[in-house]
Length: 266
Image (cartoon, rainbow, N blue to C red; front, side, top):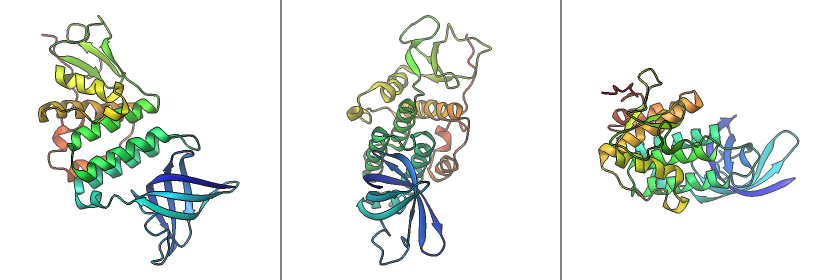
């Protein structure tokens, strides 16, 4: 059985001297792993189309227990991503996150569209890295069934306060009056940061990356989104660690670098 689909290469591994084993996020088939024979040969049409971060059109043979790339043609190689180490490391983190969250052998068009749009902004440099990172993290978790409840305080239902607290383990909000001293750690959010965090979850896709915040507010949102990823999935990501090392100031905006805290009720 042959499948014709477009997809983004989110992982690649060399097999032998000339073959590749790639992981592709496809529109119709979700995440799949496939062999690309002789893809490392300089004269192979698969050489660029099967490399990491390349968006390509694939002709895939689906066998009983494996996929084989019969043909691949590059659509967009995102060359500019490789010019900046921060953009490159962030794109690789998004790929690792998609590998953990996107469905296998099922429709995944929304996941693919999210990564392609994020790669576009990273390539062009028209959005701050922290903004793109938070939008991708929160929207991808929501697509995977982990949508947080950011509508109002889980205790008293107030919509906004001078400071609201996001609990990344449970994915809910509390105002300072309702937040229990013995509760789980929380990430404090100013009104602007809370509005932005809600935007990453609830906004229409076409407007997902269309918000602005001062740098301090972006750090708040970035800490909340990253903490939610790490708590929800219960694992670390090597590509995320590399991003924090590569990106100037990235550690300061990370969930680990500026930890979630138990707040005094005052």
